[in-house]
Image (cartoon, rainbow, N blue to C red; front, side, top):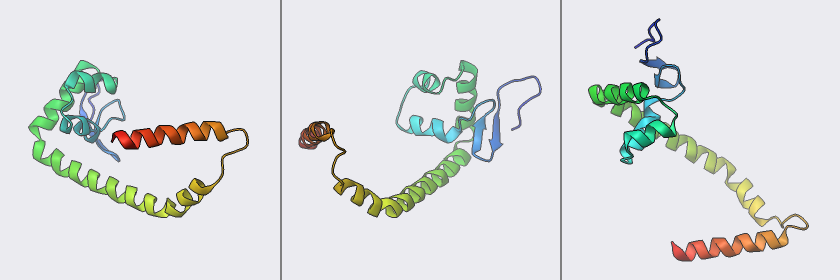
Length: 124
């Protein structure tokens, strides 16, 4: 799983996990979109990957599905724990900011934003 000296694409293990060589894109990034049933062509264009890079990634995932899925679940769990930590840590700050009056001259903009937010909540 190390990059070859001739520059061929490979799946390598970095501190971020299983990664497409020559990129910062992990297989877990790809898995998010595969789970949401996005087509490979969309995923390729989203991450600016070459055909070879996306094909290597998809092939590796298919061949090693159990291993990749297990690591993906660990990544999702860690992300959820991080999200909860930061939401809890910033709860008071967000509440304080929400009660602050708008900056002078921005009142009309904030009123418009509140109207749009209220309309959006009614639609949901």
